[in-house]
Length: 283
Image 1 (cartoon, rainbow, N blue to C red):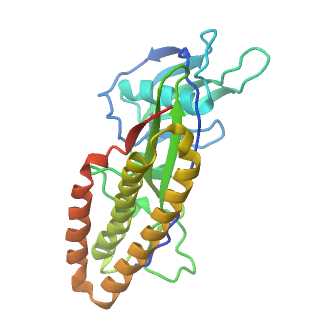
Image 2: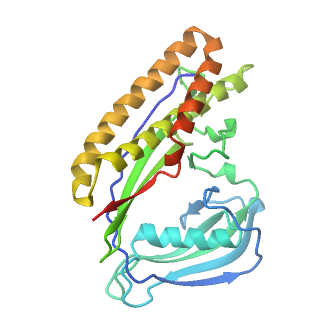
Image 3: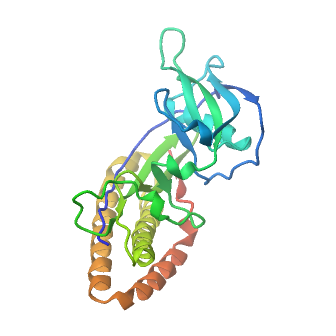
């Protein structure tokens, strides 16, 4: 029931302009997905169980001419958003073009799919009140592993802005790494899962604290690179201390699991205003 905790900072400055052109073909529309619903992007060479796959559409992201906001992240997010509107929970890219002499944009073509059992393919889970961890989410090898389970959770952040805009967007995510996290089944697996879920919840709590501090301490985008790095290091250290304290107390007394559940739930509620983990900063 120990854990392995990772943090990662991703700082990206994205310039937005004219939107890329979207060409979409719908074969079999399903119920639209919500913004926080799981979605998987497969590369061309990745194998998918055809018995679990249902192709429901096709999508292309093209250069519309004088397109500025067409970096890879923007193009993929646009494709994912459109795929979710027709009920797709995955897409497989079958044609990929980076910027070249013909265009300064990334361009893709992808099959939109509905996977019956998406959990088989999930590599990352974004924290959500509606999405609790399952034992099947832990996909790391248990060979020669010393503990019953290990949770790898991450805090990520990015910064984006629009040209001629006076506002920039700072966004934080809390994610669970399925491939690194592992779980050994035994007669006490449900209690172990409860313990690991709280490790993930603690990571989410400190992601909200990071968002709050950025909002309070960073007044302009010019200040962000220096101040954000310092704040992130401090939040990371606080997270390590809290995670270690949680393990230490619950290992010595299993009855304290409920106490910790209540404590972190109360703290998450205290920072509920930062659940979306997005703030606007003056440029």
